[in-house]
Length: 247
Ligand SMILES: C[S@@+](CC[C@H](N)C(=O)[O-])C[C@H]1O[C@@H](n2cnc3c(N)ncnc32)[C@H](O)[C@@H]1O
Image (cartoon, rainbow, N blue to C red; front, top):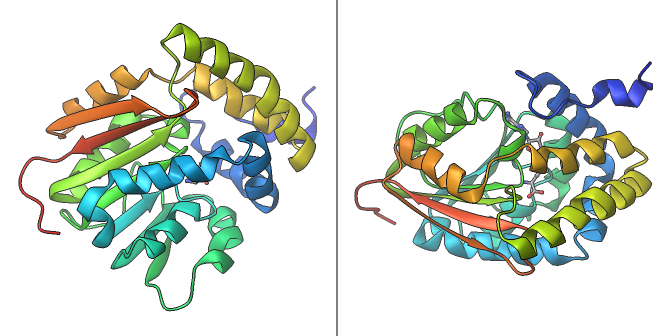
């Protein structure tokens, strides 16, 4: 029989694992930031800064931080001069755990919602950034189509993610990182080992960066580009909407 904590942990690839994913992140919320810094050896914040830069001028407009978690990217968007940030996540405890980090005087709205059904009008934002969240979303085509719907003409989607590795170098690096470092350290810091085993396993079950770029093109984006970060563990994908941006 599964231990009580294991019952919360979704099975990677299961049809609608969303309710369990939400419950799992709500449970991890108090220890999420500390575990993240240790697991990535502090590299995660540098990756996030590069993701913000990849938004281009859109970072100074109205931006959605999708799968915002504990709001690290929202805080960086404030520092980058975003006019307004919509931080969207379906795990309310993750948003609450990060709320204290938002600097005073910035317009950051916390919205509890599923990435597959965004409570926004069409053409609502200049940019969307999603850090390490989309691989947890089932029916990812629905989230991609929602992003295309709410982006303004010329808008940008920037995705920072652990895609399934393709090159030998990233297979070796990412494989050892996922199988050993992430579950061991994440389990130790959070006291919730099965969740970090799921997070590591979800990378193996996810698509390659090329497949993800194809998904964006099939769901309304006009062009995409992608690159590996250093070290080649995480990657960045940028999707651009047709039309001309006005920020
Ligand atoms: C690994 S955390 C990343 C948080 C943050 N973006 C960061 O850079 O640290 C993934 C987040 O995605 C959220 N998430 C997963 N599936 C989601 C969905 N279907 N809709 C909205 N949020 C989702 C989780 O609740 C969690 O807070």
